[in-house]
Image 1 (cartoon, rainbow, N blue to C red):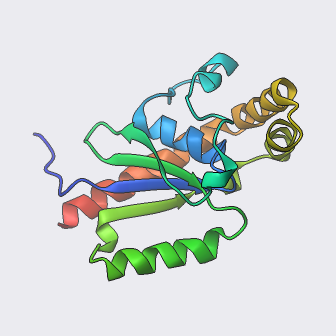
Image 2 (spheres, rainbow, N blue to C red):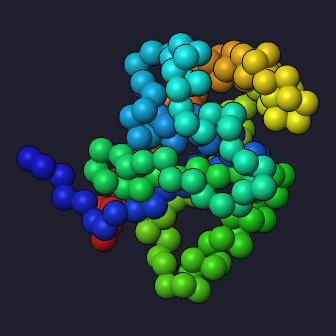
Length: 165
């Protein structure tokens, strides 16, 4: 029996710079990265935005794609003001008439390891790109199962919210 779902949702994964954690989580959600194995370095580098987001666009959502039921999946960076800025975003969405079940804002930054933070700094700030990217990938691969679990939890929340409509 086919599950009935409500309206299409907008799901936004966010992290510090919108270059690693939120990109990986949104790519998993869209099916661009596997859920049954840890991807090779080349698979991360094949993602259009992995370690390539423009720091000037922090706070702007990037469209990653759609999931298997048509929800829109985005990612973005919010620097170190993630909690306050998500409150502001939710307030403006409410003022614009959006209901909480129309969207999910999900912090992916807690999954980032120290090595990924260091690699991001080397790649993005110091322009030691190849070594920095390798270090970020090493860190993400170490926590990849947790990224998959986070995405599964978000998908479960989506289903619950869509069934309430």
